[in-house]
Length: 281
Image (cartoon, rainbow, N blue to C red):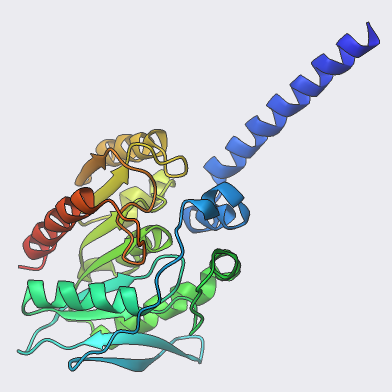
């Protein structure tokens, strides 16, 4: 009898722990709740380690931008060949601003034509080559510092700029946050399986631009249920959200993923490019 009671108690405790974990995730700010994945071994395993790659470019260059916390931040800049106030902010996945991200930034730059592309470095120079380091760096991201870097990028672009954002995984959530910070300059955000904004009041007040969400049906982290909640909140707030699901797992289109789903990645790229051309027209 005692063993039976003990078993029931353990089951109840486990259920309570799961429920508390769900509540914590639901009420944790979007950027922090994604960072909570950093220490999860299963989440780490979803990210194949990138193949070594150094990006060489005749048009892209690393620059320093001033940030409002009195520091500077790194960014990879591709300047439009004609006078343009249009900017695309590119935000890296959990590996950091590596060569793969620079290559993708240059691909968007070439295909968009007359847009300045600025790839931000939210890791302040740190680049991970292993899952362990990526987990460490993502978990160390300070919300205030990340927002200071984004604010510095917005100041660099200038008040008359029109800004769209894009990012993958860790960067997907921050792409949405960056657009929310851009105010009237924000033209749109593309988030690849990033953590959506969960605060309905912030959605109503700060998302005044169209959002393209690219997600995976088999994603165990940014799950279809998480996306469904975001769709519901955006609809109630009368905000524009276009969602595309793929029969894939998390990180299926990450630029650094050597095992990416080629067909889904190419289709998602076409959709993202068409979206960015529309909002930055």
